[in-house]
Amino acid sequence: MKRVFTAQEMRDYEQIRFADGRANSLDWMERAAQGVDDLLKARYPEQSVLVVCGSGNNGGDGFALLRLLTQRGVDCLGVLLTDENKLSGDAKINYQRALRIGVSFALEITSERISNYDVVVDTMFGTGLSRPLTGVFLDAVQIINQCEKPVVAVDIPSGVDATTGAILGEAIRARETVTFECLKRGHLFFPGREYSGEVIIQPLSNEPKADNIKVALLEHNDIQHKLPPRPMDSHKGKNGRALLCVGCGRYVGAALLSVGAALRAGSGLTTAAVPGAVKPAFAALPEAMCVPVNTSADWDEAACYNAKELLSQKNAVCIGSGVGDGNILTLIEAVLKTKVPVVLDADALNQISRNTAILTLLHQDVILTPHPMEMSRLCGEPIEAILADPIGIAQIYAHKWNCVVLLKGATTCISNGSETRLNITGNAGLAKGGSGDVLSGLITGLLAQRVTPFDAASAGAYLLGASANEAFELLRERMLLARDVIDAIQITIGKIEQ
Image 1 (cartoon, helix red, strand yellow):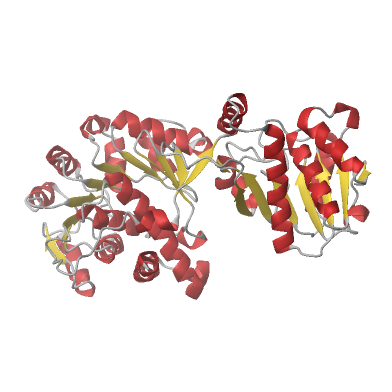
Image 2 (image 1 turned 120 degrees about the horizontal axis):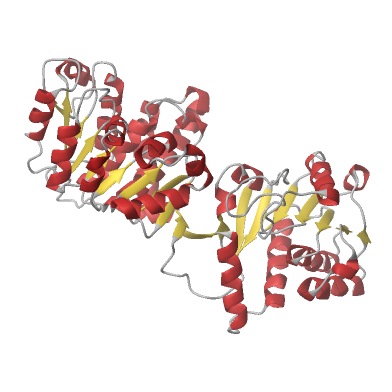
């Protein structure tokens, strides 16, 4: 997993290392510039470079980069958008070093000047920017964004808030961003994620990877270690028993999708508890044991009673996908009291939000999978606050409710209250009905195989997005259906286990 910092966390990290002598700020600036130079050599060999510089440490990275480019014979020019007399510290030292070896600087940026160079490098502002761009910097951003040349941002595109990903008025649209030591939240949350392009991490220290990572980005290798092993002598009982209480006459598809995903995730014995009217649809999914819990199209008191009778010896339960408006509160309460690992999704969350006393029954083996509007109804926070700080919201309420919160989004936040993992796999094809049902089924299938709730939620989110990417290769995002993602899960898991 890759560490993810806020702007303040990065400043604190640097200062602690500079203060105790574990790092030298001038040396780190040199390594930062070397990382950008390495990218330019690899991606843009033999191409001329225009480096647009500010006055702070980000500008200092630019001055050091210009020296490296000049030393290896690259046609380059610096544009200094501030009075050289305002430079100080490491930035001033690197500016003077650049001048001594003959680096040339211009004092303004124009479209005509950019047209003379192949690549533009943005070193105006780094992670410390917290106010909208103005004056010559705003003008520079607008000119650069119109130039149609590849743009490489240093640390984070100027104008992107490094903590939230918000755009501070306007911001550089980069093709690549070279960031230092670790990812920043602004690289991973929209719109900053879009403006950052491909993000490359340049290490600055030689310290071992920290174990106590509070916020991290999920990667391929992480999921490989979280999937349950499949011994040669395994059998259906060993691979877990899942119960999914899903569907109604109006939402038959949700039941099929969630149960189908649980099967694809490897659940050994998968039982679908559904209203009687839904039963015929399961002829299309013969691998599941489908039990009608009443004779109607909707969930009612009888359905809840009969579903509770199916709880014995189950390793994981899912409640909510497509259950509609039928009252399932007694079922939710009963399942929570058994302490069996459970995924609460969709209509289960909506019903809890209208009966919040149930929140006191949540426990560490519960996974909630709300989208922002569902989360707003559950916790009472305005949706604007949730969208502004999804990591903070997921952390606060996972801790308060003593459970795992998987807050859905283009960047999904999964928290157990002390740690938070981010997932960015997936594409716009998932912005359709049924994707959440597939996610809940995936997580339930993993829970049934005794994967811990935090790991099951993390792996489920990653697999959903990665499988959508596999399906996207064939179908493109507009044609992609939720069931296509289920079909691609086997491809994704196969690649992860290689």
